[in-house]
Length: 343
Ligand SMILES: [Zn+2]
Image (cartoon, rainbow, N blue to C red; front, top):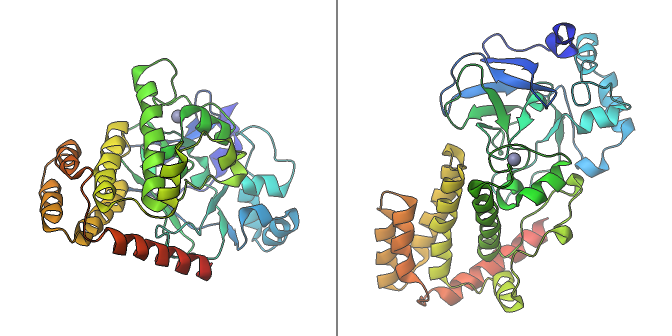
């Protein structure tokens, strides 16, 4: 049955180390043809077409117009797409929604890019895992996207990506609600100590993000899961107000950084991209201290070898005030105001 499956006819670049095959319980998936080293490029792909609108505003007519402009060969490739690798899509909009990637999710929260969704024939073949071995980093140049190995991948191993960066902060139950299916990765297998710890780690990460950024995580609305249906990230109203008002002391902000990094490393999510995301944040906080002893402790924390050692040193700052606390809070409030005015 799989020998003449339509996915056999999708064009894969000759030099890409991947092949498409049936995946037990998941329809079809992407598999490594050879060993792929951590950090290596897996696949670079141009979109078949791009629709420059927010996902929720895209209509059947939008997709129809984009489809009409394709070459006959591109139309043929689009027609190979199947719902869950089996059923023909009942409409173009569904085919698009199931095979698109958001091109506007820049890595820098202060830069808001105009909305854009691209249809990617091959990248949409990757199955989901909450503990993936590959990543499609945000912050693309132009409309192309690319995937990279986040660990060493063996020949024959299935390559997976996480369908939403927000999942780093959601529990198993919350992720499954957003996905609309049950994932069977290590963080999702019920009844294991790892799974219980995983829920605790991701939930704590969400609280730390809230305390750091003053807002709760942004759950995509098309996942069928509004923030309102999540359990609250911070229960105490006084602490929530302090977070929203950026009144979190600088010493606490500093502790949250290696604590978050430690949780993600334990979870198995500290890949090269995550490392590049967290280290500038930590250095920035160190540069903000104006009480000399605090700055010295923070710098000493940074030269430790592991996240746990950095965290242990950082804890010496707990509950200490800093001369910069007020001006830092004021700075965050000004930046938030500027961001809300520009969007
Ligand atoms: Zn999972």
